[in-house]
Image (tube, rainbow, N blue to C red):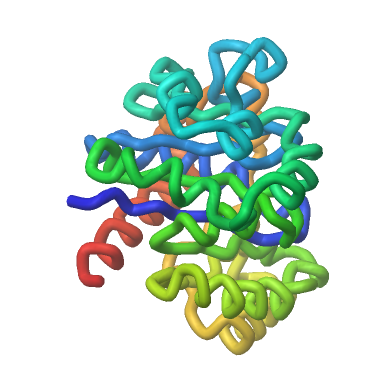
Length: 260
């Protein structure tokens, strides 16, 4: 199968992008898919969680890859991470400067990543991209290179949908570069169907985005525990509700993408 590249994107911070990337990758790997995570967030939280080394020790991160030559790709990929069958291209603080460099040096500043990833087609089953909390060039590069996008929305917060319209407008612009990009749907995070605010957010998310993932992710302290211990939920405690939710999410995505 050709590689499916999924961006997890929302320019609102703290909505569960990194959590989704890490635990979705773990569950896809558990289904025997080969997965690569690309960390495009200057905070590099996915790298801190997954990486054997600290991001500051890594020479070739996603920052160097974006502004560098294609041969850097091989050096950028770390095969060994804290989760089996999941590889990583580290994020770094240097990503903060990368956008300015792309604007200055690249003839097509939104299309650097797509060129670099072309040679990986068929090598990985899934590439998951952890996008930064902004709609600037880093996110544009991720979306331009992706086959699919998921929008995580914090269901337990009245600000959960803040700015989703801006993101949807941005997706329309990216369609000029990447007409094949498919929106898999909004993913409700910290969702509790018994709470009125969650029900309202779900209805409004469906109204705004047009499609929702059938799977929702519940609130759980296990997520923070897993981050501190640099483990997946599967490694930490595979019987928990939140781990089973990510397992269901992986199965749902595989089914949706195969149907496409």
